[in-house]
Image (cartoon, rainbow, N blue to C red; front, side):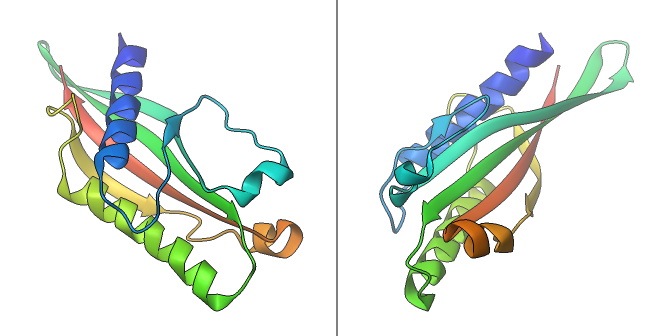
Length: 143
């Protein structure tokens, strides 16, 4: 049952992002393990990955489930300030969508934490000339 809660949260995050009007166009996809060849990274990738679930028993009849989902934003960059700023702004837009909206199809889930780590991965910029940023969104569901 707990895995289905986590997957429902991940699917809700994916749908919510895909329904949003953002500055760049893409289709977010839920993955278990996103892997892309470097040649595929010219295209913008937004990956939603179920990360973890923790349970806290509140009473005999009620349990709180904290479901963490990672949203990765990746694209090879020309390394100019304008394109990197655009990708960074897109990450902020996605975070704002998650912060201000209920999940599509899973409205009982409530956002309890948003963490951007890394805001961008410097080693990906250095080694791959690729922008990579991850948003971890944690939602609480009571059952």
